[in-house]
Image (cartoon, rainbow, N blue to C red; front, top):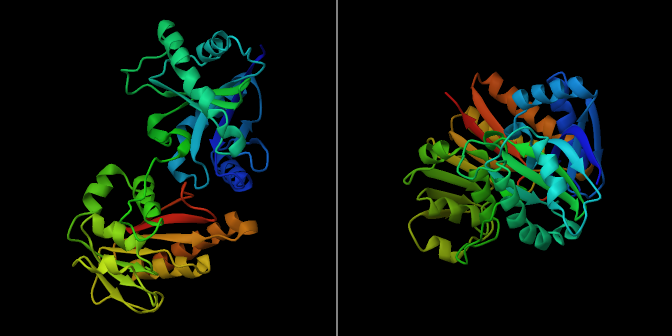
Length: 364
């Protein structure tokens, strides 16, 4: 059973977005003074960044990345794992001993263990194996004093299985990682929601806002506008939080949504409608050029029409990374011209497809 000591960053992503994820992590590492190379395969659902150098040099590179690379700043990554070993040729009759050896080499005890795979149909066939194998591994780790489930501050042990005989072994920092296994939130769409898009806004609040921000910035009685609202999934989600919503769309919204007093429908173009006075929130899921949506959101914040906004950017398939950079520049230019301090977070959510979801807030 070969155990390969390899310092590397492992990132999960949506299949088909490996190139965007690789370009992003390479740039982020370079900004921290760490160069390396990327290993991945098209439609694999994962990317590996390996720093240049070996031994102490590689160790120093990983130390720098641990201290400076922030998961929340990565758009296309679903998870960030700091790996130190790759195990292959795992014996099917007794995988525990070689994996224990790999975990011991990490030099750190852990508080939880996740066995994961890529989010592909082929890899999902391993999910049954992982579910059956994890209790055996947990018992062995506890017996070796490597796993301490009551230690809520210890890092998480991640075993990422390429197949049932190969796995990357690494750690995730609870404060610098995705809290959902495989980076996939387990959210359900209520039968009362007018569309499945409602779950996308629910995920955006969880992924882009902290718990404290949700408590402070999503308060019953606040007022919001939903641009491009039809059929009303996002308006429904806002109303469920107790916000009063103005649904803007020339199309029809769900009649059930309008039966209460929480949602008002105005037939208008979301690009041209303006509120009377200032609102707390604006959300936008209009399908249009991402640069137009970025300009629209920046204008709302610059003019004080709202304090917080969540919007989707439908990125072109072959220029996703470059187009996102262009949208960031549009927002930065507009708000700097208006002398408005702001916070911008962007994520390729699990419920996104070719779009990314952004949260923009005026900070003063």
